[in-house]
Length: 105
Image 1 (cartoon, rainbow, N blue to C red):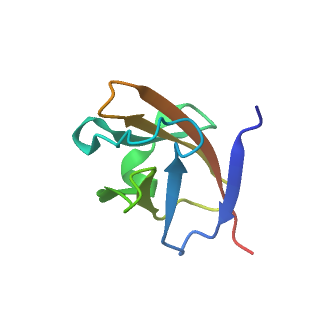
Image 2 (image 1 turned 120 degrees about the vertical axis):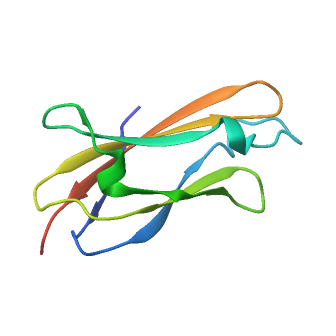
C-alpha cells in the first residue's frame, strides 16, 4: 500500500487525522490513553516528534474513528514520517503512517 502524503509550509500549523474507520468493528471505540502519535525525520531516522507534532492536541473525533493531532514547524526540504498508533477498547491495535513533506513555496 502506498504511503499517504501531504505537503505543508514551515509556518503552517493545522490538524491532520489518522482513520481506522474502514477496519474497526461496529461499536469499537478508540482507547485514547493507549494511543500515540510520533514523527521521524526521514533523512536520518531521528525522532522529530517535538519539532513537528503539537502532542497536547492529540484527541479523537466524535465518531471515535479518527485520531487527530496538530502538525507544526519543520524546515524547508525536510520530510517526516508521522505514525499514528491507535488502540481500541476491543484490544485491537492499528498503525497508520503518513509522510509530511515540508516545502516553502
